Length: 455
Image 1 (cartoon, rainbow, N blue to C red):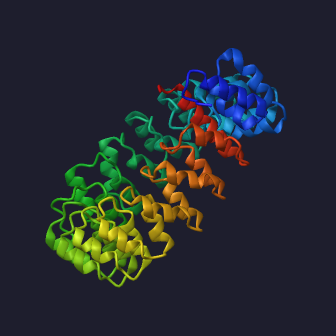
Image 2: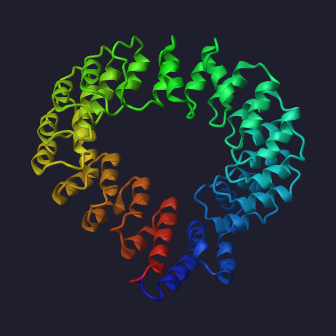
Image 3: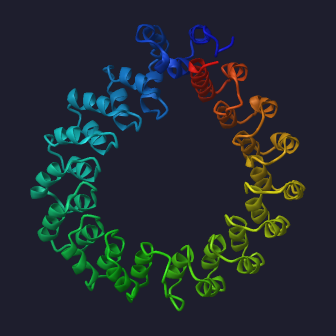
């Protein structure tokens, strides 16, 4: 069967019907015309475990979820309410035809519940439900404002974190309580009124100043004030928002601040030099990864006694080729693996790395688009499943090598094969006979997509 041919889809459908496989039928469901779905649904509903399984599976097609909501099985409906793949329309159906408080709570927590649906749930008086509504980022401002009058402490904190809150609601929340934890959430919100943000910055409570330092609306003057704070956690939070230029923290005593500083781009050479010899290896790691670190400093860090620092140099985006070759001979395999995955390797460096039998190094070479076919063939036959999967994840791996992995003993590897661009209908049809349900499911999806694409 040639799936990409005119009759390919019909042949695929007939084959799935003959198999009686619920997983294959579920995978094909969204591509089927409405008039043909019923016969495939008979396979899916042939045993009650299948609809229950697909009701909770995040990989279930939306079309099948829309069919499952028509069932009267409470367990299926409960699973649908929790399934991250369930669309808004189905969540609305679940809410309209239910008196189940647990189900309402699942819907209130769902990322696909919109503001209209969440507003309708408010009629079901429940403390847990109200808190879930306050926490849901889709809850409308009007509903949050209505809930404020009777809101508990936890609900108020959730409101203060909600992205739909505006300055008016945040001001009302601040005035409603002197709870420092509530005020801290308000201070961190992007809509925090300027006068409240100013109060938080000058407050004696460290928590308030730290949360205020995370506010994206801070002025340059306020950032400078927070960078001079006596508490390291406040300075760290402020530094995350500060641009790389004009930073004068060479004598910073706190490690956590220096670690954050070392990640900044555009640092001047003096500051980079100071951080590169820091006693804390995490600071040196971030300097090693920093693309603005000069080559001379990278050379020093490439000989650092800490493996993770040398690994950082190996992963530096602008690592010079000569230093790349040098780290390819590092005694630690984790450092060499950092080199093996680089997309700018020369042929000699790849050959040098291939002499090592480290799993980490071979996995890196397996994923590298520059790795020669001959070497990929060797890696594809490796005893470690993760090393073999690296070859499958390599977009440049040719079909001649992928065919070897059709019989891979690890199911996840076979499922990943279905998504590789080089795998065609012949190989996918072979995977339809796979003993692992998820592999068959993935193969049907890939075949259905092929059947819809032009020849």
